[in-house]
Length: 168
Ligand SMILES: [Zn+2]
Image (cartoon, rainbow, N blue to C red):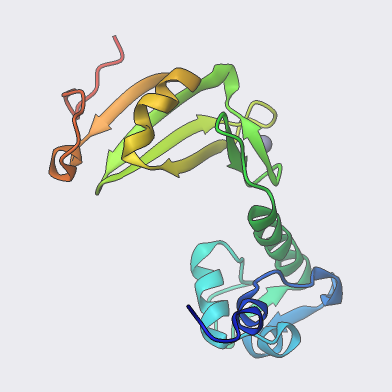
């Protein structure tokens, strides 16, 4: 489809080398751009996702260690695809099974979110699945709560539970 596909892939390959970042140094947005050869916009989206800044004062500064952690998680996330019964834990930086195999399903805007707790560190873990796969995941996890605010709009068959859920 695209010309010079290999070149494109290389350009947009978003695995960054964390080894060139110095743990104890602080980096401005500009320095991050120069170091990792990325666009300031990219760094902007990183801030929005989870890259920690020292404060909100311009120019933004980032601790080297935070940048390293962020990039490692980012690289890992791309590298490791979680199994059907696993969700990615940001704390462990690994796909993990949910505690007691319990998962909550949350449905909004035609997206289905599975939410669980990491069986190792108990951090909240989640993943987005396609609405067509709900039944499949019902067999894998012990599903607890179902919110289905907007599912009807998706034209999918669904259980018609009330959005105000009662655990009893
Ligand atoms: Zn964990």
